[in-house]
Length: 290
Image (cartoon, rainbow, N blue to C red; front, top):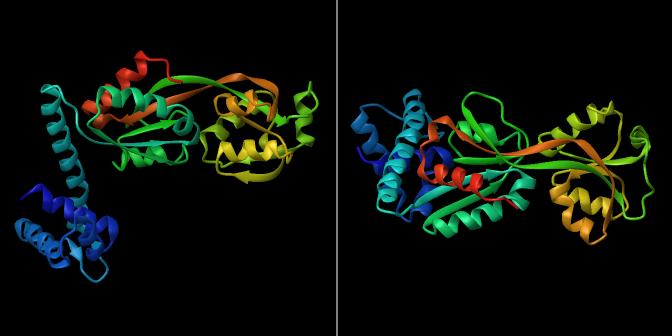
């Protein structure tokens, strides 16, 4: 059995197509089929339903075990290269909107200065989606704005932040926060770590987001700020995300809310010895992440 056949089989399941995998690997479709058939012959059992490209029960086991097998091999290779003074391989990073835009880039700049041969794959997700992607092995590292729940994950605080109530640049002062219930409000997605933090922060002040007059719900903090700038309403956002808009006088900061929030670097317990992750964690502890 070799790693290439396992990886090809897993790609077929991921893409639900032999032809797509053939294009991705730049080989013929019969060559892909042969690799899967050879793997089945070595294991003595069918792994795929050919008509639907769905795994058999054995195929499901091979897929899950194969994922760990390939990961362990990657760690072994990286550990050997680390001992030679070089770190290589792919590091799959998932980040929620705010850390992915305002925190992770500067950390990765420092990381790649030290490990230029590592291939970084960065994708943006809602905070609520990242823990499951880490647990299933689709991501190696996550950066989120709310601490993931579950014993399977390890989390480190990398930066603190505060929430601010913002409005159009000509907004009047608001002394009594309960009056925001009468204002047009722009919400973030419920799965957003930022919005989950906003809900907790406002709840501590006796205000429920259900009492706010929501006029729009958007995917990103940047979209929230743009809508506030366009005089469409008010919102509560991360101070980190609003820094540029504040400096350029495009919005008005009406109030800083009392509760802090944290940003976390998180990863699976099973990957705590991954050399690239160990290095990234060490680096995040040693520098002031902007």
